[in-house]
Image (cartoon, rainbow, N blue to C red):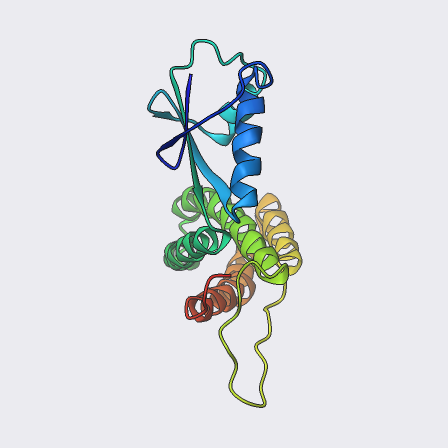
Length: 208
């Protein structure tokens, strides 16, 4: 099997690394030693998912022609996450406005079909926000420099947003449409706007 790390063939010890998981673990350690992290894995040209990676952990390396491990810097990965969060926030706010219009027009059927997609996207967004927030807290990404005599503060962490989602889900289960509309307009949307503004400000920072 050929092991590639960022396109360059790397030596490895078949007598010590007999499984897919062991080889990936070795590549991960080498990347970490260079200040990088694993960003993607291909087996014989096919990109594999995180789920595949877990399932293949004990798979013998025999039969694999080429294992291509790609790495990136923590700052670059967070930059991608920030861009993704900004775009997702914009799409969510657009969908929320559509749900609100349907609810206020008493078109519950149209509102609830889009609402299901919104809730799934909200869950993804807040997971992403949490990852970025934790990355900033641990110093992997520096905040933009503040003006003299001022400081840059992080927004409230995603714990508060999970409470908003719980109230939103409760309102949906009770079919309390006015309450659901109120939560979407007065709590979910402002929370998304706070995170979006924070991410936009972070784009001016330098990767750490």
